[in-house]
Length: 285
Image 1: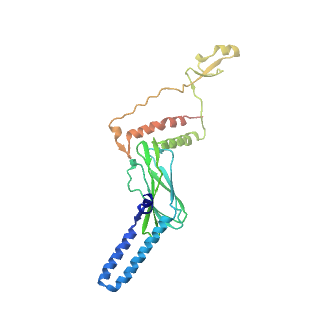
Image 2: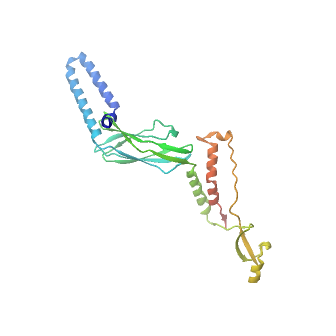
Image 3: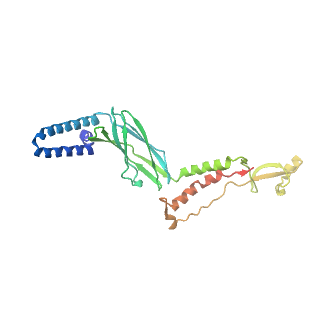
């Protein structure tokens, strides 16, 4: 059963085959009214059958093409994610290929198809973009390749196993963009530097000599007695604090915008907002 499927089940008739058969049928009808044309039409039909047999040998004796899908380990929600197909023709002649990548059901694309011509032994990297609009697991299927020679009478189908599952996370590509923005527009400006802010909390940092303007309530009398001059304690701002995020999950937040709901966009903003704030915390010197 496997041999029958390999050499017959994967065989498909192309449009060129049906056009050639229709042309032969028309000639046979005409030869019925013009008898001298019958013999040339029979010779033409035999020639057509010979070409079909040669095309069959070309497709089923040569090596099958190879294909591989190259993706990231995760997809970014709401952004264009690059997917790469690496296709190689292992046949010793030029062929035309129709490529079908079985995309996840979330995209609802049933007509995704690419047509490319490959020379003998040629390899091509084909790029395309996918834009998910919801989180979850996205299941990719097989890579299906229909191969036909330059005769174009028959096609052979190759199913290449490439199943994989990719998770879709909130828009981490946007997070990287805002992180780069904070570094380029704030930290790299001339005259800007990172400064330590003196706080009034109880998180002790260091003891230093008193200068005009220091809070006299922070005088360290023991250190003053040992040093012989006024010494004060420095404290820093508390870094740990409780942050409460209140998110509206009402009906208005479910309104679509650019194929994404407002609720998803708000959650994405909360995802990369702390990184942006931390990267941007600089003051002018």
